[in-house]
Length: 274
Image (cartoon, rainbow, N blue to C red):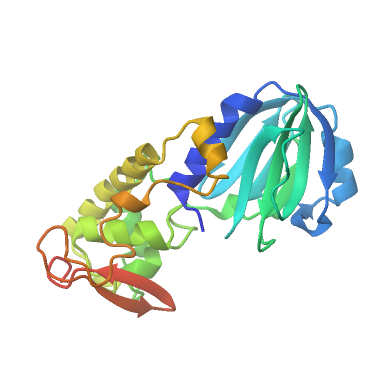
């Protein structure tokens, strides 16, 4: 599943290209991907609206209209958004198409069909998508060692699992939790309530630093994004531990280990992360 840096990359590529464009038509081939309201109402309310801007919150994207309606979407495991010319061949598993002015189409493709869309007006409260239950963004001014300790410091759960809790920290998944814990020199299976004050401070510094690094590495042009069909996020060459089980640790040379924590794979260095 794409995580915060990848979703931010999608936002940065697409937003400048769709700002100010009118939604002239909407084609929905899989009505079940529209979680709220009905697919028919989703179309009727958005037709003729002008796209204002996009936002990212955790792993969610929001497309705002000039009228301050908002389309919230979650790509889930395999979803992707592609901006293409109307006459370009469609990708397999294209489930939704926003036909925009100027002969452009914003297409949503999803092999596994887990991605979802929600539409809300300015006055409507979102009690459906889950975006309102997200914790702090890692770049929020209030994100600190104190915040992490207050929300996680009494937990007996492994710190790896704690970093994945979207209600505490928005946007971290399996990939970057491994990278963060490696940089912070914390073993992924350590119970959160065993972390020291210095370790909480390290985590509070490393989390935004690591995610900012991968946001930068994921930077691409619209052409590069389209050529990869929105699936090449460019993080792989820069991952230090995730996916590198059995390879030498980039810090000490010890072979990297893999373990499973609550069903999640985790790669770490037994020497650097004691």
